[in-house]
Each structure stands twice: as C-alpha cells, then as structure tokens.
Length: 234
Ligand SMILES: CC(C)(COP(=O)(O)OP(=O)(O)OC[C@H]1O[C@@H](n2cnc3c(N)ncnc32)[C@H](O)[C@@H]1OP(=O)(O)O)[C@@H](O)C(=O)NCCC(=O)NCCS
Image (cartoon, rainbow, N blue to C red):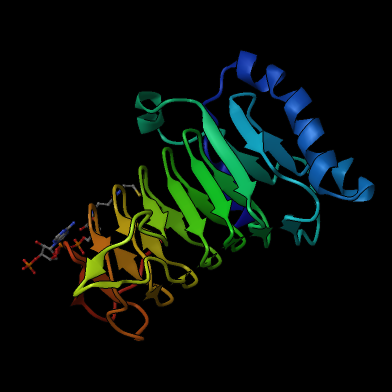
C-alpha cells in the first residue's frame, strides 16, 4: 500500500516544494521526538496553516519513519487545481489527532479537532478539499481508506435543535472501518458507523448506521444500502 501512496502523482510546483521545507522541518520537530523528526516523515505544504499542534495532542505511531510518508496539504488530483491551495490543521480545546501510519491529506483540506479526537488509520488518503471536524465527540478512520474530493466528515451540528421544548444532543461519534471508499462530495454526519469495505457513492450523505454488514454500497440522501457483497480496489 505504501507503494501505492508513492505512486500518487505530486502536483506541487518547484516553488511549493522548495518553500515547504522550512515548515516541514518545523512541523516534524514540533510533533515527533528527535530520532524520528530528523527523518522528516511529514511533508507539510508551505500553504498549510498549522494551529495548536504539539507533541501532546498530535500523536503519531509511525513504525518506520521515512522521508515524506505522511503528506499534509500537498498533492491531490487534477480537480485540486479548482480548489484553493491553503489547508488547515487545527487542534484546540483539548482535542487530539492520532496518526497510525503513512497518510496523504491533499491540498485544500480542513482538519479540526475541537474537544474531540480524530484517528487516521494508516495508508488512508484524502483528496483535495476534504473537511474533517471532530467537535466534542470522536472520529475514527480505519486503515486503507480513500476519500474523493470535497468529502465532509463532521460529528457535530454546530447549533442545537430544540424539539418539543428539549435541546437535542448535537454531536456523536463517527467510525469509518478499514478499506472504505468515500466517493467525492459525500458527507458523513454524527452517530454513524461505516463497516469495513464499504463504499459511499458520489454525493451521498450518511446520517445513521444502516447495517453492521461489511462490503455494502451506500447511496443517496440519506444514504441507504443499495447493494451488498461488494468490494473495491484502486
Ligand atoms: C459508487 C459507484 C462507483 C458505484 O458504481 P456501480 O457499482 O457501477 O453502481 P451502478 O451505476 O450500477 O448503480 C447501482 C444503483 O445505485 C444507484 N446509484 C449509483 N450511484 C448513486 C449515487 N451517487 N447516488 C444515488 N444513487 C446512486 C444507481 O442509480 C443504481 O440504481 P438502480 O439499481 O435502481 O438502477 C458510483 O455510483 C459512484 O459514486 N461513482 C463516483 C466515484 C467518485 O466519486 N470518484 C471520484 C474519485 S474518488
């Protein structure tokens, strides 16, 4: 799978690559112990904004740290050219981010852990413009997942709904299993569980846990299981 990440075409200009080195060095030493940081496993775009990140709240489990195996705010598909270059990695209010192995988060991404935890499984890749926000509750993304462009994973509604005079809980955990394909422009909202090998079709919105069965194709708004016993490959 690492070979697969390596095969991904980089789209940054020479300018971006060169000017990303200072931020890359700064970031690695900010989040990793010296022995790992010196190998620069995180390659961070000069266009990426990093806020509130420290060794305490950005926890990495990289077995073999090697140069550039984790990319933040860099590369992506051609569609990325239509999306702004800037990305944001923001941790605050006691939020945490766990990185379980090599990952690729493309340009235009917005990753925010606000009181909640986000876990990125190894070899997970996110295309341009993905928006991941954990507020109060947690988001767990398994290994080998693939996100198309402009996907949203958001476990909090932001505002409160008052139903029959009672304030509804506006957040809840999200769990995305291993080897899930979240097609472009899809969204995953609070209190959902997408089992291993699932596919969420283009522009679908998952609003509740549909089934515990693995290998299902979900589609529509709200997303429903439309096919069972499916799988996918790159
Ligand atoms: C997930 C996907 C690959 C499934 O393809 P598929 O297995 O060939 O599915 P089909 O075209 O046979 O469709 C099966 C059924 O689901 C429906 N369906 C497919 N995609 C849908 C969608 N996004 N929303 C709602 N319904 C959808 C079809 O209308 C069809 O319905 P029917 O059985 O009533 O005729 C495809 O739907 C998709 O989302 N493609 C876009 C992938 C993408 O975003 N790529 C960007 C890079 S990651």
